[in-house]
Length: 445
Ligand code: 2IT
Image 1 (cartoon, rainbow, N blue to C red):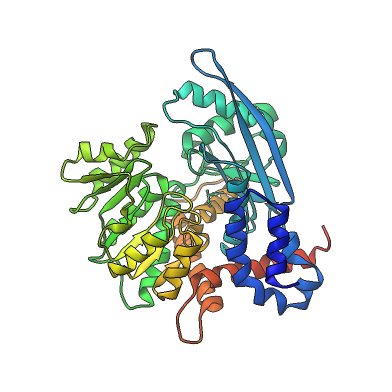
Image 2: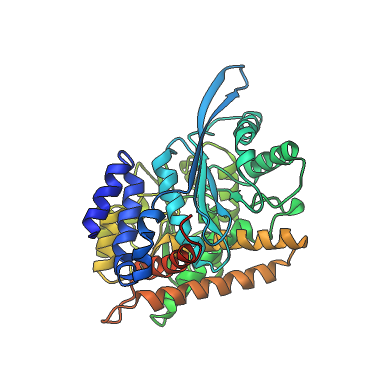
């Protein structure tokens, strides 16, 4: 089978799923040689098996709002691949959630989790629930209804969800509490838990910190670091918050944040007070970054625009998928941005990614750079199993070491003849080989 024939088959089988097909195409393109050159992988038809989720659960989530009105959302959990460990991956609550989004995220998660070197398979779940303007009581009722079905499909050794967009410590708490009540057991079935009830220190910061540790490794290959560098950052959620903290600590200057309403440019750069305000913004449930410019009048708000037009050294997209397109990539290059590190999952469109790779600047995909989040979830699972809790220094040290190892794996599998490192290819090949080998070892299941 050729790559083209393979893709035609996947497209015919998964119509109307553009994000999923985008993720599959870009990954399989880069691992095709590693696949074809291994007779065992081909003999076991690993690629066709890999793109088909082991199991997908789709369910109704009915809930009542504060006025007594009944609403119905759709809940989904994609249990994608369990070759190297229990299914592991976040839960996303956002109106854009559908089967295509969750399949792309679950597919990416297989490779990401493999890269962490911890025993975690790939999964993802969520709902098209819109939390904007909802009260705390409404959010609790929704989480409980969601869990009233999902609880029978997950477990500490089976499938361990966590947060993602729209799901933070509050939502994890409501879902975990309900799971515990229904199952009558206290196990590490969720990660991202509150620190007094089984959560790991550093987990909230881990995705963002990991992105910055990874970027730092990339910068080192060019003999430089964050000191004095300006950074365009998008989003203002938990991931962007962690990135902002660590970049600032390392002497860089974060000058932008963004939301669905536009972006803010703060020439002075973020500081402790402004970073703390990001948490307040997130808790407000209204998804507006314009509020930042009201609070800090030196910042300028640009309605309906994205931060990739600002002249900076480094760009870190940390909002959502396909938030950086071909025109944005060209704008970044025109401004001499020399490093783009993905903190979100698949924030660059396929076209944008091609442009950045062709320009041979430092470019890293989310599945490598943002793997520190799920890696620290893996560390939370370990602590839960041992029934103890590590100090933050210990977790942070392990996180740094994991990010260095992922970077090394990307170099090993992504170095080109001319010396350029294709981190996208490196991450895909490194993540793939381990999972594919495990699948071969375990027979036709
Ligand atoms: O995209 C991701 O890696 C996450 N949302 C975190 C998943 C996890 O299980 O911690």
